[in-house]
Length: 303
Image 1 (tube, rainbow, N blue to C red):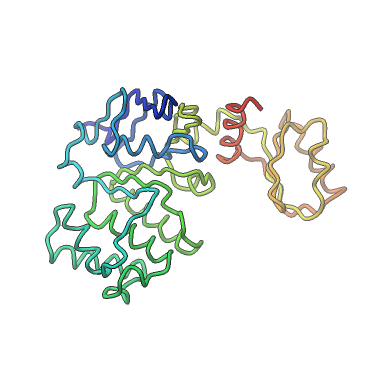
Image 2 (tube, rainbow, N blue to C red; image 1 turned 60 degrees about the vertical axis):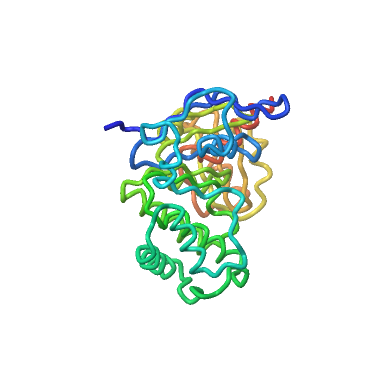
């Protein structure tokens, strides 16, 4: 059996003489989560739309579950688009039936599976409500339900956390990991690195239409070494950027990710920190995916 559920090879797409996707290739292994990452406008959504045959590539090939795209394959794919779309005048029950039937499901199966998922997402009381009566977050959860209702073999999620509050982000994250345990392969596209870092196995990062990173998450991090220190603190940390042995600083207000010229200088850093700020945590660590992301984007901008 082919170990790859999705294979993109050399995809190219131009719009109005501007190259949106430039020779992008990737492979998604069976039962794994691949993070398709990059800033807004990088080409992630265009790549996904080509994968789903919504738009055709100018060149390159796409294989899904070992086959070229066909309408029948759609029944084995769950696709959550970046731009959500539900019929607002439909009831929730009608929405589930509509999307279930599109994926080849029968009435009793749709009702049983739909009821199970509505309960899991705390929407069971809205079964007979119209979509327009739902809050934005509820509608987002309903859209996610319609994406997984038919138990697909491949999930393609474009910004799945968009519009969700922290509680529901955790819920959706847990469902995604649950689907992985069931052996479902998942493309997870986002520009939110902190969430991607928690769940992906492999990473493909795109910037300005070009692939700039491709590999296993731990391997990608290892490429950037262990010259990083994470510091939880209180106080004014502005002086850290002026230390001559500090290469870079990502400061989030009460947490810093500091890159040193040499990790052997970590004790010197700690001594310098405690003289000026209150240090609540100090840990040698790998670079965060967010740090790598910002660095690769800045490299692309020539910064």
